[in-house]
Structure formats: C-alpha cells, structure tokens
Length: 107
Image (cartoon, rainbow, N blue to C red; front, side, top):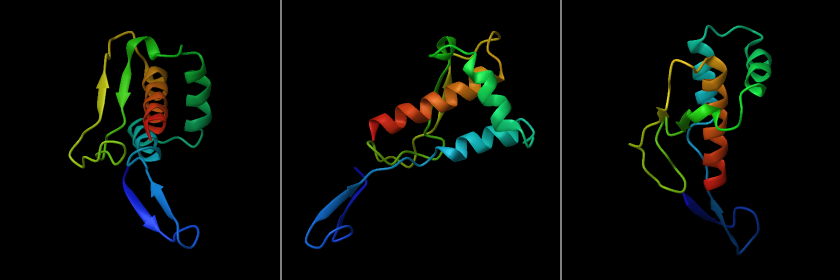
C-alpha cells in the first residue's frame, strides 16, 4: 500500500491510500499512437466489444510509468505480451483496458 494518512478523512483516524500510476495515460498514449481521432473512444469501444475476454492471449501489464500499489517499484515497466499477427488494434485496446482493470483489482 502506498501510504497512510492521519486525520485525512476523520479526526484521530488513518486512511490507507493505494493507486495506479498508469491508467488513463496508457489509453491516451494508445489514442495518440493511432492518430487521435475525435471519435477514437467510441470507435474503439465498439470494436473492442467484439473481442473475446482475454484478447486471444494478448496481455498488457499496466506498469508503463512504474507501479505504486501493491508492489511499489518506480522502475517496473509495462509489457505487451502474446502479440501475434492475428491481433488487431481492437485486441490491443481491449488488452490495455483489461490490464488496467486487473491492476485495479490488485489495489
């Protein structure tokens, strides 16, 4: 867990904060990589709906800017694993979203 904070929410209590370093920034990076069209998100969401869960073996680790929680490691890096010629842009987009969701689950 990234940090504890005294009196942040209630007097005489502590809260524990955990978070992800790269979430929307990965999706935005991919949008820019593909040209950044205004309808990018609606188009990619529609295309990604047609890709099965697990993206046919394509996996993204969301550590593109390191990791905060649960493994604090600023040097950790993202991974795109299992990429083959059968995968298209929708597979990659969905895999990014699945990677971010899995990272959120770990927090």
